[in-house]
Amino acid sequence: MSVSVAAAGVTTMTGAVKVWLSTNFASSWYQDAKAEATGSGDVRGRCRREILFSVAAAESYLFEWVRDEVLNRDFARLNEYFPPDKRTRKRGVLEKWQYTTEKLARKGLISSKPSFAGETWQEFDCLVGFRNGLLHARASRPQSAGLPDEEMPVPSMEDFQKMEPGWAVGVITAVIRDLHAAAGTKPPDWFGSK
Image (cartoon, rainbow, N blue to C red; front, side, top):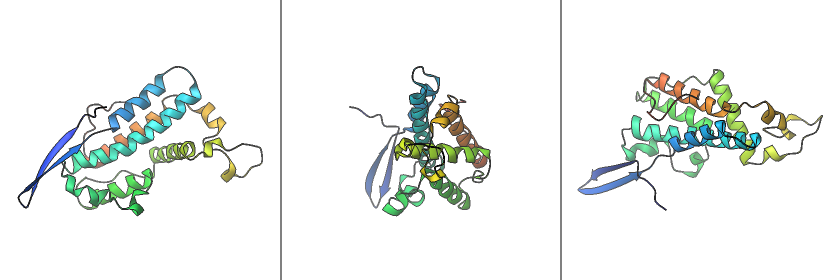
C-alpha cells in the first residue's frame, strides 16, 4: 500500500531539522460522497454512505484547512487548535467547528467565524445526528407508534425515504462555503457545487 504525501514541511529547532509529512483526505471523502449521491442501486445504502462520507469530509476539511491554509503548514501550532489530549479528542464534529473557528477568529487568523445559527448549521446538525445514529446503531432501533423520541431510530426509515440523493453532500458544500465566506478565504480548486 502506498500513501501520497500532500505536503512536507521542514522546521529547524535549536539546530536540528524536523521533517513533517502530511496527507489530505477531505477531497477524497467529498468525492466519495458525491459519487454516492449520483450512483445507482440501493437508495438507502447510497444515502447511508453519502451521510458518512459527507461528515468525514467536513471533519477532515476543517483540520486540513487550518493546517495548510490558516497556519500555513506551521505544523507545530496545530495542537493549539486541535489538542491531542483525550478530553478534547472526544469533541464532536459540531463542537470542533465551533471551537476552532471561534478561536481562529479571536486570534485574528480569519476575518470571522461562520454563523452557527442559520439554516445551514441546522442542516449540518441534522446530518451529524444521522451520521451518529448510523455509526452508534441508533438507526437500528426498532420503531413503533407511541414510542418516545429518544427511543426512535435516527435516521428513521421515513428519513431515508424522504432523503433526496445529494442532500448530505449539499449540506457539507454549504457549510464549507459559509466557512470561506466568513473567514475571507477561497475554497480549494477541487471543491465544487453539489
